[in-house]
Image (cartoon, rainbow, N blue to C red):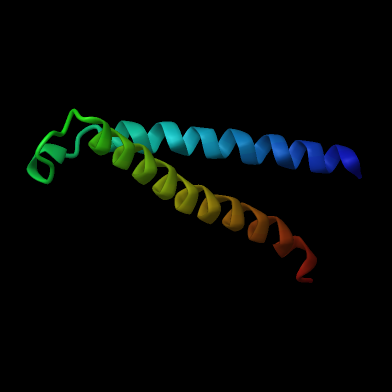
Length: 77
């Protein structure tokens, strides 16, 4: 039973980190200089990090929920 929790925890960590990297990569193409006076400054970088974490959390939560729901379908019948 505890092995399942360990594997699930490892899966969650891996998926979350994967989506953080993908989100960071995708946000690199966004033109932040249109919205900030100093797009290379610490405030802009902090906002970009927070946006990356927020978007990655939403996407990974959706992905993990979908994976969990799809594995529960076998108990339907």
